[in-house]
Amino acid sequence: MPTGDTEGSAQIIRAILFDLDGVLIDARRWHFDALNEALAAHGHPPIAEFHKYDGLPTRVKLEMLGIPESERAAISADKQRATLRLIHARAEPNIVHQACLARLRVDGYRIGICSNAVRATVYASMWRTGLAKLVDLVLSNDEVTHTKPDPEIYHKALACLRLRPTEALVVEDNDVGVRAAEAAGIPVLRVYGVMGVSYQSVMRRVREAERAVA
Image (cartoon, rainbow, N blue to C red; front, side):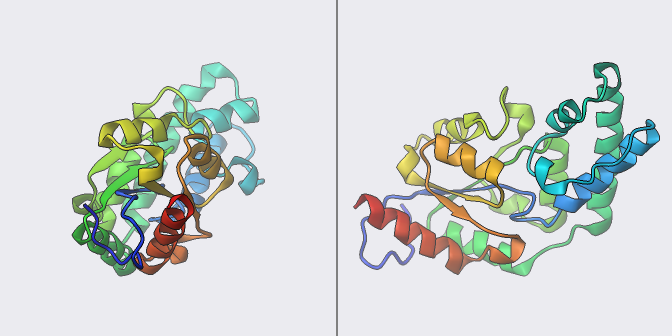
């Protein structure tokens, strides 16, 4: 059972579910760089409206761009290779995030990663940043039928951890993820970049969420 400082409130939240890109790894632009590289290789113009597509999986981006279905698999594969190359070149440990997850685990919270990225990208990011050993559950878009903003990934996380929605907290950085968490009935900590994630910021939101249902 979690033992963190909750200022006397009943212990309700038992797990913290983190999005990955833009929350624990500053890779949002890497995904766009990789996709634009793949698009250019197939003769398509680059994405310019970053925020319009932020947080969505490659499959959805390609659909929104009107890319012919016959080209999508090849573009996705090229994008994935480019993304992995960028992760291995640019990703590095963040001591604040490592300390955050480690301290949450010491307090008794279970840690989950729930990402719209593909499994290979998620695991590569986690190993490169040293977070893999601090996580209890990992869900990518390979584990769900409907990606965020659909709440399926968060419903699945709750089922895996055998928790009710009020027993978890989601940490997200964009509207797509926030909508998914809220649709699942889970309280959310909205951050605006990786610098917003720390043990203190997570615990402040935990206390708020617990007071709200006390």
